[in-house]
Amino acid sequence: MTIPAGPYAASTQSAPVTEPELSPEEQQFNDLIAADSRIEPRDWMPEAYRKSLVRQISQHAHSEIIGMQPESNWITRAPSLKRKAILIAKVQDEAGHGLYLYSAAQTLGTSRDDMTDALIAGKARYSSIFNYPTPTWADMGSIGWLVDGAAICNQVPLCRASYGPYGRAMVRICKEESFHQRQGFEILLELMQGTEAQRQMAQESVNRWYWPALMMFGPPDDDSPNSAQSMKWKIKRHSNDELRQRFVNMLVPQAAVLGVTLPDPDLRWNDETQMYDLGEIDWTEFHEVLAGRGPANAQRLQRRRDAHDEGRWVREAAAAYAVKIAARKKNASAADSKDLAS
Ligand code: FAQ
Image (cartoon, rainbow, N blue to C red; front, side, top):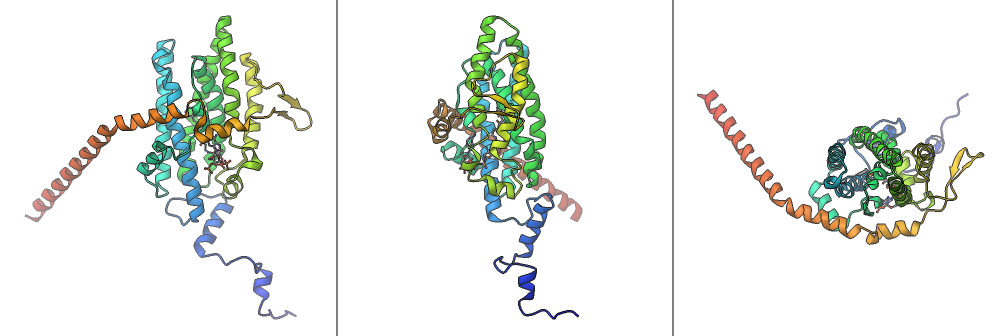
């Protein structure tokens, strides 16, 4: 015999009373996330999801644009025509990545102008790594091997980010980053097979870039305010520490091929965890860089401001040209309609 449902049966059996009822749009959003499907620009999304995406994607775009500076420093001094051509292409790729990412952020309703204004006003974040100087040619090798290497580790999972335009931009970016990483590795390999002075230059550069590259993955998991929600929304797929560990596991055998030493005396294989144990990261340095007090923060921002000012006439000319073309098209279509009518 079926017992007739009492007045509270539905709420106590199928949904806990504490859970507020979801709107159909919100339910659909949750279903898409649960099904590992994609959220597209016209889909409904919680305001906090939109904000968090704008936060992450715009920071990422700014990183690519500011990230052009440390390497462009060496374009005029690259040791051969081949190296110069490769470096120009790489720096140009980073500009392209910035543009894909600004476009992805724009689909969330924020404007490129607003993002740029925030950057040049010093209010927006960009990756800590680009606040370190590049005094030697070997730094081009270390940036490719360590910085692009860290970027790939962090960004391959972002290809599956729940927000469609971000995930799709990441697919293309990762293909290019993978080339960047190999060219950096190859620069270091060539130096390590060179003279004693070249080997020292490579090792000294790896010593300077190793720890800042580990900081690129963000603060430790127990000090990462955005991670939990970001992972629930499937924007991030792995925690900061997980990706940092994955990166080091990948680096150790590559360092052995290069013949460089990773500057961590506590780095050793752990049989139990089947991973490398790492030494302490200097999080004070990380927070100093984030607060604008890194070795090259002021210089990077000033260069970006100058470039923005120097490029004003180009933006104005492009806007005036767009108005002219639009007017020409409008006149042409008005003339066509007149012809058809007569
Ligand atoms: N630098 O709660 P979490 C590249 C901030 S592109 C500066 O853990 P989340 C290519 C974080 O924003 C490199 N700030 O944050 C290239 C947050 O502040 P907020 C850029 C950092 O978002 C190569 C606060 O700390 N890549 O290299 C950093 O869950 C060569 C608390 O942190 C991306 O942007 C940092 N390192 O995780 C170009 C990848 N770490 O926003 C040229 C996409 C954390 O609350 C040459 N982004 N913060 O004010 C991500 O995957 C994430 O946003 C993380 C941070 C992992 C960076």
